[in-house]
Length: 192
Image 1: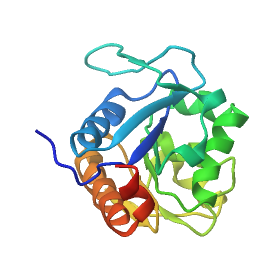
Image 2: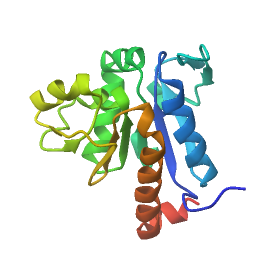
Image 3: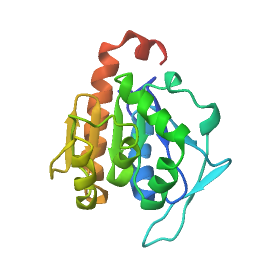
Image 4: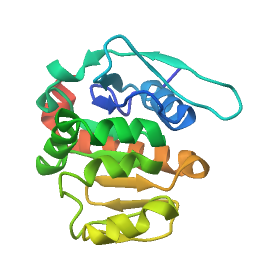
């Protein structure tokens, strides 16, 4: 039995083929268990295929096609990592705009691993403090973001984590921030 601390919170999970399986599935299960409604949003039509070095490939159904998804229908955005996933998304102007709209609206954006790179093309990371995999640090600095080596960094409504080893701390931080926002938002409580 789950809790209701995220009851009524709608989370869009922007993802494409090649997502890091554990970075999507573990946080999603935790958010769902805490009462959130999570929706896979993707440029893919019916399903996305993830990757897991130990267990092969996992298919996840697409709940809402990116072409019809509207940021205003969600309270938060979750960006899992995975190199191929991010490559597909940053080449898709609709995906970049979808993610940018959450940042501009000051809605919570949670990115783990390479997922943070989806925000680079939109230029929304300038003067933000983030954490990321080591290989992305220089690219983020060039975009004006301050990158630090910590498991999780919370900069207002932007929550970032380095990768797989930080899933638990990341999930806890995202849940804490969303639960706090929900407790102060009559709109989020109304949708419960």
